[in-house]
Length: 462
Ligand code: HEM
Image 1 (cartoon, rainbow, N blue to C red):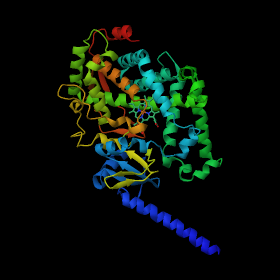
Image 2: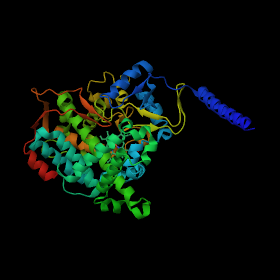
Image 3: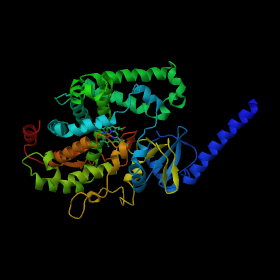
Image 4: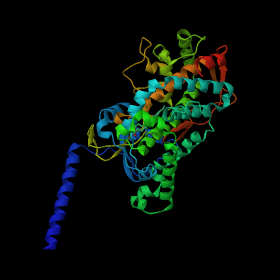
């Protein structure tokens, strides 16, 4: 009797599996891909993915830490899948180590988006103050330009998140703590870094790595909870239904998501300025016409300075900040050109391939502002810089980051002649790659091109 029931049950399971298999087969097949298991922490993983795309096509499958991942590696496939199916790709894969580190407080992306949306304009005077301080820092200590970029972004986000009004120094304990917490977070997001990701059951045991992650969570929450009162008021926590710890994470996410990425983008922009002097000369010519040299550029000049925008867009395309992309999770089956991306799968757009797609950006390693300009010299609207990600998971800090890139590029080009030091050639190809890439430290010569530079900056900005 028992065996008949068992047989019936097994047959039902088989019928179910075959039905699902046939259903998927009717819809399409899994994207093809190379055999084996890939280690995403190898240097220049984004370029490795680009090479695989040349063999298997712009949508392919790989296994990382034995988990299936579907990679999108062309501009048009990214628009078709990541943008048009944004609603079906708004999940993130669960990473157990990151869950423990964040105390399983979920991403409050929408709340952050709305907070930043309301704050970007309101914070412009503060933003401007930090940007002019950045230029003064470079004027006084040009060697340390990458450190100044870090200080600029950390102190800007600290001001926006916690209402610190004075520009912060690089040795500020909060700035140093942000760096430490960020490193912990980035390492927790790597599947291969923690055994608990392979054996989730271990998270219930008091093993050393779980204890470490829990300690990191406490450190992070303590950092985020400091001086929370400004945000507390602005978000009107009582009404929003967000708890104090969640609000602490919301502002903390802003610190972690915003400072390292923007600092990296600023440094790549300075690197591009030193490597491509003819392109910078075009930007400076426009600044001299619109702003002249007797006042400091301002946010209000943005509409009349499309070359500044084209420069920072091209710089982000040339050296993307998140070159291997960020994981999304499919919440529905997605069909693309006879291939099926099954619900539940991790999907990543390889930003390097998307932004170096020769069909959209011919000769992708060359640096050209014209990629972003139409015949009238205005910004094109039909081609987009996708370095901020895709769909519903697109970076909520984009407007803030673009404001930083605009004002700093305008100020840098207005204030300095920027050139490569012939005795220390820049490694154009080199960057350190984690989830966020950084240029290998490089030297640049900054020569003031404005009389009374310091005086103008102090009276106009700081
Ligand atoms: C140049 C600077 C920046 C770049 C290149 C950048 C890029 C990105 C990218 C590629 C993503 C993932 C998008 C995806 O999954 O498709 C992301 C997510 C995120 N970014 Fe940014 N970002 C920058 C600045 C900022 C700033 C200034 C903030 C906040 C103040 C911020 C906060 C976040 C947050 C919270 C997320 C996670 C959103 C989620 O999971 O839904 N970012 N960013």
